[in-house]
Each structure stands twice: as structure tokens, then as C-alpha cells.
Length: 222
Image (cartoon, rainbow, N blue to C red; front, side):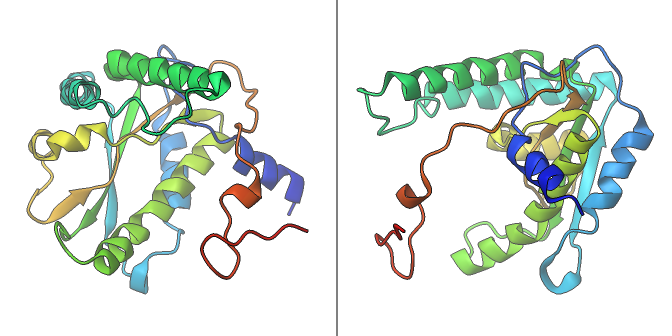
């Protein structure tokens, strides 16, 4: 096992939006390879209550994109795009957020053109349940979804984790035939080959700004 290759995969699997190739088709066999690998992810109680809904039909993609754009409009209207508490004196961070916002808008405007849309779902609804139940529930589907995204990256595909359509989850469920009262959607993942294959690690804060050793607020400095 080549540690450097694994580290590169983990550190360069970015959210890809503007660099999705909207013209190149993605073979079903390649998507199925990624799904088979996702199936090996750990899951609560080894029950695999999760599934994936894969959408490639142009008409369905278009209808799902309309639901997504409704969610995007709400996202913008409610001011969620601007991250609260961002230091105004940090122009670099502000510029990065603006680029991310523009990239997210591009995806919203072009979602129906993405050749494959993947919706990870999990059986049983946990709306309003205790945090332990919610965390356990989504902790069973998110590893599989992330494994899918890593497998896609290894095959030259770009992905992005999005949840904006969940503002209108019931509408998406009706469109896709998902039994809303029994199954929760976790995300919507656009999948396409990337334009170019060079991706760098993202800008991140130093470890001691977000890692707490033993107790909250205690960072370890060697």
C-alpha cells in the first residue's frame, strides 16, 4: 500500500463544481465500480440501511435541478452563503469565500448538465430525535458516501457534497419515487469527469487552532 498515493488521494479530493466536464458522459460501469467500493464502508450494526439513487435521465436531472435551484434561492435569501463571523480584516479568507460562492452558484445554474447525480439515502427517519440517534443514523451512510467520492476521484471523476435540495426533500422524494416517510436523503452528489486532473490540497488552519487534546480549549504545542 503506497502511503504517498493514499495521502494524495485524501488531500486532493476537493469539491469540484466549475471544473466538472459537462459534455463528457460517464460510463455506467465506472459509477458501479465506485458504488461497489462504497458498499464496503463501515455501517452501524453492519446493517447497511443505506442505498444510492443514481440519476442519469436528462428529464429527471432537469427536474431535480429545478428543486435544487429552489433550495439555492432560499439559501441565498436567508443569507447562509455569507459565513457568519468571518473576520473582515482577512481579505484572503473573504476572497476564498467569494470564490466558493461563485462556484456554488455555477453548480446551481448548471446542475441539469452534470451527467450523473447520486443521492445517498438511509432507511428510517430520525427527524427531531436525540442527537445520539441522529449522529448514529447519519454516521452509517456518510462513510459510504465519502468512499464513493474517493473512488470517483481515483477514476478521474469530480464530485461535490451538496445538501441544498434537502430544503425540498419531499419534492425530490416524489420525483425519484423515494418513500419519504420511510427513507431520508443525506445529500446530492454531482458526478462528472474533471477538466484537468491537477488538484492541490486546500488551504486549512494550523492543527492547533482546531484540535483539542484531552479537554476543549487545550491545544498541544510540541
